[in-house]
Image (cartoon, rainbow, N blue to C red):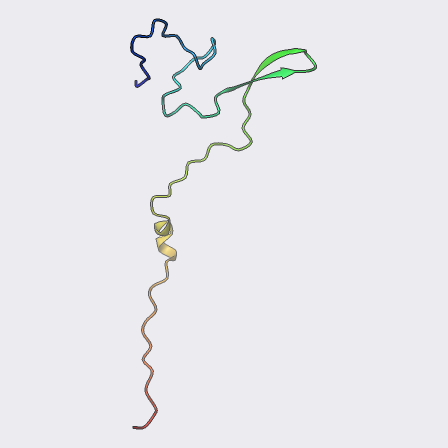
Length: 89
């Protein structure tokens, strides 16, 4: 596990995550948006913690070679057409 270390710091506590945080934010599988949403609710007059609802599901794109995705539908190179020269010299 990689992290950020500060030399000669007397108090190495979590400074960017909340107290109920579980997980490791430096891992690659941690989502950038997180798992929960904290907001103020006017009806309840308090701060509420709710699961985060994303508008779009996670999609994985493989763009390594987009021109090779459909080899069965690839058109063969057109054959050369020879045109005879009809002009007399």
